[in-house]
Image (cartoon, rainbow, N blue to C red):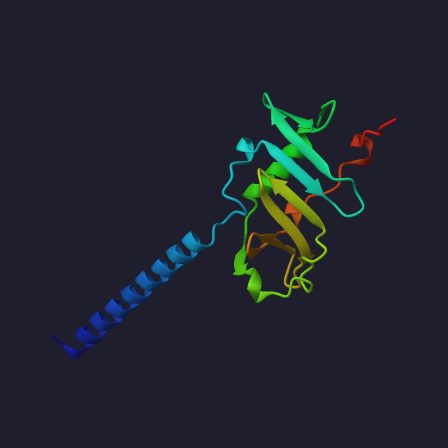
Length: 164
């Protein structure tokens, strides 16, 4: 074999090995850090609780395919808003890191802007990231960065039912 052909063959093998290593690393990272906040199907969620600072806690249950405010008597809930809240489970997580990597006070998790519980899985929403339109969200002992649009919001003023 000529020297030039041998060098090209070695270079080709090295590039193939690097590509295989990169593919393995990508697959390993994807398996270790799911792309969504929760491994729940938003359509299968049956209970939602939302706590926002300065607002009364909201508790909802799904019965017979419809959302109801949990209480006596049950009151029909805004289906669109509950679809948005349950859809947060499928929000894209751009990065996952252990909670131990952070000081919870510095990223707003000691006083979260929202605490959302979907079928006994709690999401605590902290501050926004300085690097982009992302928000820190604590899920168990890990923290994800998600789009700000995935933050729960209070109900619209005209949707709030006043009790006599």
